[in-house]
Amino acid sequence: RLPSSATLRALSQPAMALLTDLLNLDLTDSTEKIIAEYIWIGGSGMDLRSKARTLPGPVTDPSKLPKWNYDGSSTGQAPGEDSEVILYPQAIFKDPFRKGNNILVMCDCYTPAGVPIPTNKRYNAAKIFSNPDVAKEEPWYGIEQEYTLLQKDINWPLGWPVGGFPGPQGPYYCSIGADKSFGRDIVDSHYKACLFAGVNISGINGEVMPGQWEFQVGPTVGISAGDQVWVARYLLERITEIAGVVVTFDPKPIPGDWNGAGAHTNYR
Image (cartoon, rainbow, N blue to C red; front, top):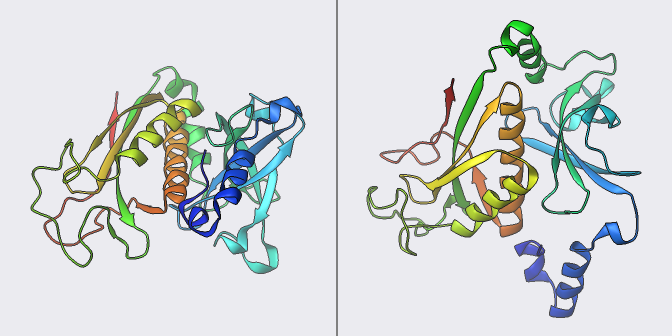
């Protein structure tokens, strides 16, 4: 693992080498403790938040993880005078950034009294999927998540000329070549990170608009489909953060006759 692009620009070579070594420390050589990154959906319904805590040892069952809390007034999910929100761990994934026994924990959010907060859509979905009549049907989902990579300082698609436009759509879909395919290293890094984490990612491809890509998650069963798609999005946002690139899931990031982005849902 390497430091972020912004960090690299600010560091001398010796400092960069030391930071890289520290980022890649294997904790299993010195401690049984692990780092758990708790992930949740923020107040907009599309923003992801996370924070890390130390646990005494490896955990594979989310029911064995401690609940945690955060300041909901800082995420648009609680008023300032009563801001505590409780994180309930729901799914565990391997951490491709810290590796070892470290984990990512997908959570949903509740009041201290145990009531799901308004932005917690997972709660009702889990109730439906856990209904015996639903569970016996074993509903399969496949999600095709499209997204666009943007140049960080100008919020303009990766590979597009600054202040201008590329050639018309047509040659970019599933393309190869430096003049048609932009951001493949990010896409492949995300693909491998998902596989490492335990996300059932089934493929990737370049999309119709240059700078736009798609990944597919599935088939997944029931509530796991949502957990896996959100963790896949989290991994993508972390990887683009390191690369100094912005990812957007906006359905129409560029107005006019340019391809939009969706999350097509297949059901069986």
